[in-house]
Length: 312
Image (cartoon, rainbow, N blue to C red; front, side, top):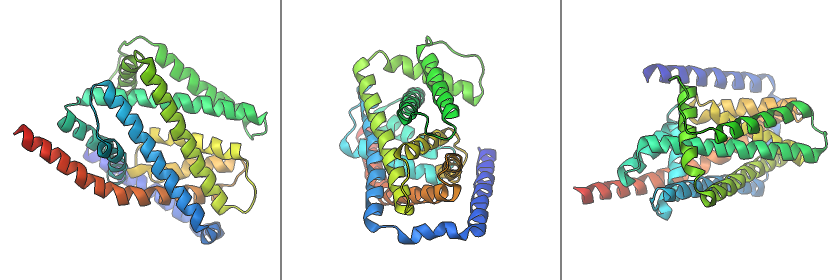
């Protein structure tokens, strides 16, 4: 664990340094930040709040599958507490806090939590892949790197579909990738038996992806005085969603910004504009997370303490 923290710290410093160096040599890239509309910024913050709320709805539906009835303050608060924990600690420490809460408050086993979380990622990337394919098809080849992007999203859907159709067997090996895939397949085996639950999870996931796309659109609109393709912005948002696979820094700090800026540059939007949009989305996410996160932490801690007292 100590080595992981050290590597996470080193990665954070390196990425942050590279971003600072870029901004130092490209100071004009900060100019759009001075002209951001307060109304657009508020809309962006609201979209990030709604993004966390859909995460809560997904958590509520999954918990109900195992006869766990989360209260409003639980399913609404846990995503904000989780996100705050991810910013404070590396390697998704917030997820560990969420798993611990569910374990001690609702007796939800860690192993089951991890497997369902993996299955949820399968659903998320599967829906993201399909959304990318549809967006590209509707664009009629107007994207830069159209075929490369299409192959990428088709590959994602193919991999997810293959994993989804696999029987619940264990893949040999004990590295992090094999363990993650085994957990995902185990969780999927539980979820796919309930078609109604699966449909609800897909719909909530789609809403989550669309809200993320709206956040990107608002950020780019706030920073740019030229008309940008909605489809291009949505593709950038979809590509950026895969950054959650690289959890080496707290809150994916730097990783998210790097992927957004690079994909923006490759798609002709501009690396600098992409970086500023990513930083704006980051700021709009952090504000509600560190406003509501501490509040819900206190509320849920009292809930957990009260439960322990009753058990005693």
